[in-house]
Length: 193
Image (tube, rainbow, N blue to C red; front, side, top):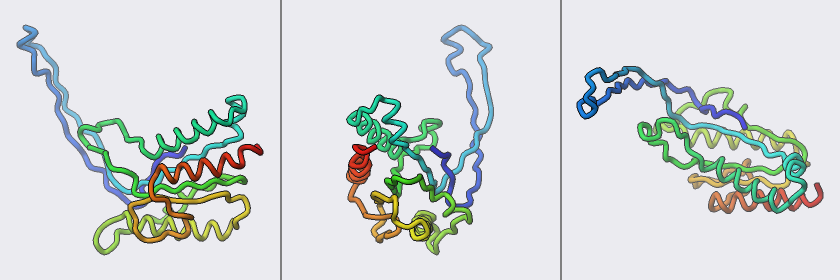
């Protein structure tokens, strides 16, 4: 699993805060404590990437295909839907991923992080999501052309995007449909692993 990176340049915002004991009278304590500090945060369109090695997973759990399938589906769902926990009441990070892309390969993993080597620029209405999706689709198209289809078992995506992103494979209607398609394709080959 890689760290998340923004697809574009972003500024760090400073959030100053103060914390004080506010019930010292009830404790008959006049000393109390106080703290003043700052935290940094930023927001943006992020790219995250993870790989599951099914051969290693199967070896680690004694070849149990049912357990491996269940673990794989659970990991993907958790990866897609997990939220950052730090400062969640202050920053409200309750958005869903704008786009999820899953690929099953039998030859090697493939990250599309290099698509964002040059930061995406906002479109004329000011957003980063649409141009990030387009850059990702363009890069995936070029990378898949370069590698060829050998080793590619399935590739698909689900998104709020209404435009077709052919470089990312087949569109799924929902995250559960996308996950089920990928896991089914992976374990159709897993019987031969």
